[in-house]
Length: 231
Image (cartoon, rainbow, N blue to C red):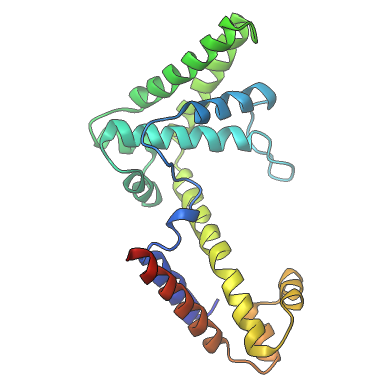
């Protein structure tokens, strides 16, 4: 990645263009029933286990849904915004450390998420959809996983990686489109070559184009969109 492209990405992040694309964000301040349902559904259908390094990542949906609920609840109990919680995670803190440093605790966060989950489970038991024994088992598994995640020092790097991926997903279509305009290459050809391992700089340069001009055009497009949005 060129220095100019890195600067471009950083500039867009500063004006908040990528905020909506970050997968860790929530539309509401409290942990919603839908979020808890997502956790419980995953627990019901997916064996809870560590991801296998060379195989499918089973339980990934469970972990993601539960991380979202824990981040949201940490925000609510600590008084921090969700973005502040994310910033501290990226800076190297665990959710447990963040909670403790801001007037609450990992136990309180887990208890709040568990209470929401138990409420949903109790309704399922009342409707006869699951047994009480199964509900107790799911709640226990949720609490075990929640404890693990609250103390997981790798969440910060995962958040940073997800933000970076979201940024690239937002930026690449514009860069590819402007690269096609600058070189005359079809968009399909450019995307195919990218999948084959070529960089966008290599593709543009080999076609006689100027990668800096492509970046400038994409920057101008996003700046215009950002200026319009803030108005």
